[in-house]
Length: 627
Image (cartoon, rainbow, N blue to C red; front, top):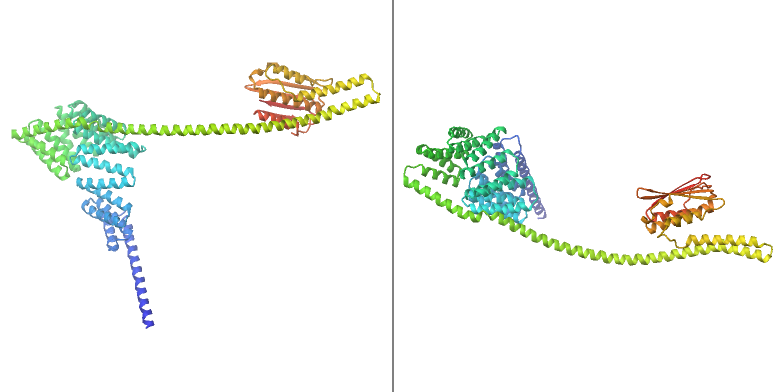
């Protein structure tokens, strides 16, 4: 029994393994055919067959995400072959399966395809419906550029199905979105298309001035000749409706020259047709000639939309000449072409011209009256609609201004708070630094007092003791004692000068001169240069005090160690800097910035100056100060 059970489990496992292996082989084969459908060197027919084989291999495996890719590829290739109906079938499958698999990427693609392919298939109502769905999808996921694309096509579809005012509102909404995003070539291209679209709308609403203004805006956005020609064509049409035939002829001539200079064969026939039409309005003989030549060029291209314009122009030409037979022939041909293109507006225009071509006076009168009434209605409606974009723009600017003011208020509050914080922090730091400075000053006072005490002890007290010893021994004359007392006095005076407060507010040159000359002796001569030429009033008290103490330190150092017989201190202003050069001819030394010299350097650094030393043994001492 146990053996039978194990055998059964083995066969189940084997069947599952084989099944999985076969399924994987099928998917792999499907992927091979999918890759073949993307080979650039192959024909469209080959690619369609390859992707069809891929889908066939997958069969019911519609849960696989790869299945969505095959549906997407199949719909794309069918669209390339202009088999729009079949492309739409697979696009609908793609939408359904992407919703089942919750694939947002494929859902977005499916909605875009359904909108685009319906538009190309001239099913404007269905295109409008899917563009609305595509717009809502992208609004939800904040894809602004995709929303803009949808709005552009919605506006175009609305106008083609006879909803000009709704089309205007949509175009304005789209422009407002474009105004909010960074200007790129794609954004500029969208604005160009919308200005041109609105220009056509306002032309149809008989608001010619606004139409021309929008065309001028469009022309400012592009230097591309092909794009400029499209706008110029529309501008010339406005001139025709304004009965400014000379301006229209001049504009069409410019367009035609552009097509010749740039070799734009696709625009050449239409440009010639438009030029011939306005020339015929001016009763120029070349008008009919150019109209017929343009028709011949278009017939070679076999473009139903372009051919429609030629037949309508010729029908209107013959209608103006009261040649109703030929007018009827061309208007009937235009009506057939309008049916092929499925354009409602073209069919209406063709029927209007066809009705005017009839010999029945009552029918003709009805059509003319109907057109006149429609024109009055359009003019009345345009009084309101012509300012919609400007009003919407002004409303947007007003809201932006309010937001900017609110932003400024917030920034002002932040700056005030920041300023208050900095002020309080500065006050706090001031008291901390003041306390720290007080402690440093006290420490300096204690250090100075200790140094003075030591100096008084070492240099004055000991000398006084020796004098007292001499007096007690009665071995010294009064003259010797007096000499010793004088020496003690000089030492005391020097100590006092080193540490007393210095008057630097007035006559600082005299103060410095007194300091330097106090070191003149029988063995040492001190010379100063240009001391009185310096404008000491322009130098701060801190700098003057520092200069005094530094020179004092250098002179004390000279007296104690240099054995110099000659000292020169030179003062000079170089640009805005005071330069002081100290030189002596003493014994010099190996430079060691200890004690006095280190103190000198620290003082100069404290006032953001510089000091350099230059000395060698038996070669004197030099210091250069810049402050």
